[in-house]
Each structure stands twice: as structure tokens, then as C-alpha cells.
Length: 126
Image (cartoon, rainbow, N blue to C red):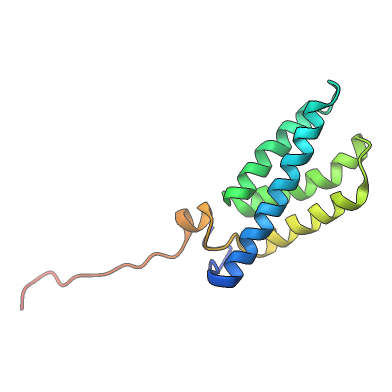
């Protein structure tokens, strides 16, 4: 993951990326809950995928991959279900933005794959 991003932004840029992740994940969650509460149909599998991808995007785990899947999922769902296209396009754009940006410093990716500071101590006493 560190090879994909040179930094994991903190402060205001990190807060903005966190807000994008929460927005996308929350929208996926809301769609999934609405689909699961409706009549049982062929939409169960995409709804479960939306729940899982939404959770991963919100916590910032494997963000480039999960955001790309969220983008593809948002573009594919209007093809198989009768959902409005405009909100799905907005979610796809947010997902694509998260793919090309980083997940930010406030994510699991930053904790697992972020920059490390290595201190080398002197081995012998002077």
C-alpha cells in the first residue's frame, strides 16, 4: 500500500478523506439496508456486497481496492435494479476519487502500511 501513496495526509486533508470515506460507506450501507428490507428478490447478493464494501471503505482497509469495487458496484446496480442513476454516479465519482487519492492518516491502511520511523541505536558504548 505504501508503494501506491507517497504519504497518508493528516490534519485537514486527512479529515476530508475521512469524510469522503464515511460518506461513501454510509451511502452504501443505506442502500443495502433499504434493499434488504424490501421484498426478497435477486438483490440480496448486491446488498450484502454493499454492506461489506461500505464497512471496509469506512474503516479505510484496502481502500484503493474497496473504493474501486464500490465504484463498479455503484455503476452496475442501476443496470439490474430500478434505482435512480444520479446518486449512483455520485457514489462512483467519490469511489474513484478515493482510488486515486489515499485513504488518509485516519485509516487502517495508514496504521498497517504507513511510513515507519526506524531509529538505529549505537551498539557500543563510547
